[in-house]
Length: 194
Image (cartoon, rainbow, N blue to C red; front, side):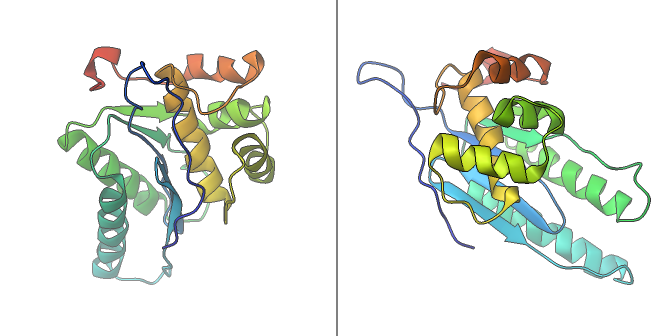
């Protein structure tokens, strides 16, 4: 894995310490991760004919890598599950991986925010219908980030949303974009360690 796009959290000299927020775009093929240290991706490949042991090993590998990257944080912002009604793909595996990672975060007492793909796109571009390429372009432009994939861009936007919700935005965001924060499933603010 490579780490790119070092992103400082906004704070003042007399203000609170920067919140430790991670953004996670959970995927079987390329989970994007954004932390204070930058962005990275956990790429994996599978086949439809993989055995249950191979599928389990793949999900365990992704989960372990994600947890290594996450470490100790105040808040994890994950993209909500999507596409489970779409024909084809690995519906059970995608859902299983999502719950495996979210459960591991919760078991570590890390508060989790669930952000829909449309809220993520709206925060990035102003439109909840924007495609991944537009989100990637917006993330690179707004944060000056060098991102190797849309998975990393999605993770960065998820992290930025968490930072904004904690009143430490990474950059100025138009009010129409920031309105996307209202439609997310945030944890109790008191649960977020500060």
